[in-house]
Length: 253
Image 1 (cartoon, rainbow, N blue to C red):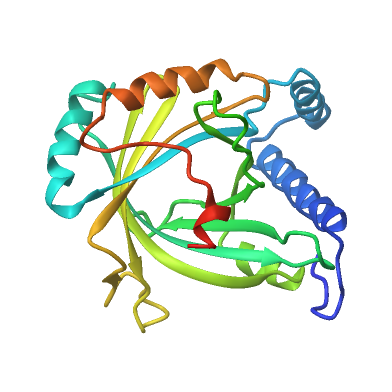
Image 2: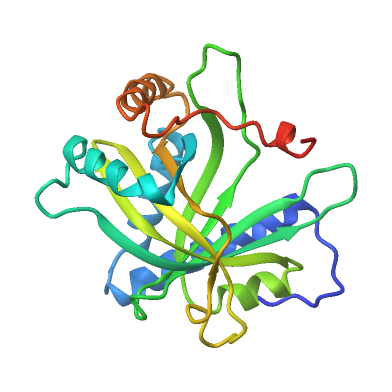
């Protein structure tokens, strides 16, 4: 399903190819799982789409904490979150941000590809993130479309053939906590090293702070979860102030 670089895609055409790729992954999974009735699996997927039970909306709050204060925040999260006994889950990932630019003035389609550097056999992750919605001042969180899927290590080549361009890449290391449906990540972002085949070596932090994100993936229309997130975020103050970030305003600062 590779397309020559010279081919120009509209966003709709591109998403069609991504959908075909997704369906191809489902078929491969069915074959590897020795499923005798692939039609049943496809019917279940169709029913899930129609019943609005697929989590395709991300509710998000963001903030930051200085390096010197991060241990205090981690201690606070250990006391508030569910995985108290086992402790937080650590991660060391390599993430690439790719974009497909259509005719102006439309916004580019942004995709993210992530892989775990500390788990070499883990599957790669492809993520589509849509334009965020701030909403009115009474909405506690940002809301944006978000679709995730597991994929193979050839995904970057596949997207490049479809016309995507790698805008930037980085290393992200940190910890993940769970509180019910809510996910909290405390992560530090590093510039890539000069050794392309060893991305985790020779890295340099981009700042003296950690990025803190509180998020929930849920089906569209479940706005009540945003209020639960606001209440939880209040419990982390004054260690970190989680809020809606207006990226459009930041570009003019």
